[in-house]
Image (cartoon, helix red, strand yellow):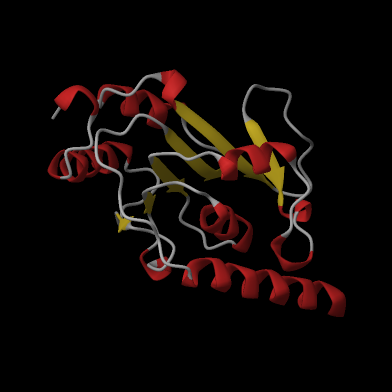
Length: 174
């Protein structure tokens, strides 16, 4: 029990170190790749709505955090567990390494519950622009849209509004 607290404290220090590094300026041009970090269940409706903004399925990659008591899924989606992280935020999951090393144009952190395993995945990502839904984690994101997970239509309309203001929508769609 005591060792678990030490381990979690070392991971939280690593998160703070990652978040204190200056972020790179936003790359010019439209968004061509999107990464989505989510907590266990992500509605497929959200990805379908992203397609309405002009994004294609092959431009979107996802990774989900599974609870420790849930067996791994046999699907095309990538998953990881909180127990995949060791001391100082080192992880042992090849799918997670591939995801965090990808230079996404946009990373969407599609979760509302504060969870260190999701936060460190967002912080470790090399994405150019990070969007989140949790106002209390403003240091983790470049843009925060404060909506509930269930309000997918509102999230998509807000996303459309902000991305069109930044000229980031593909094919000049509004």
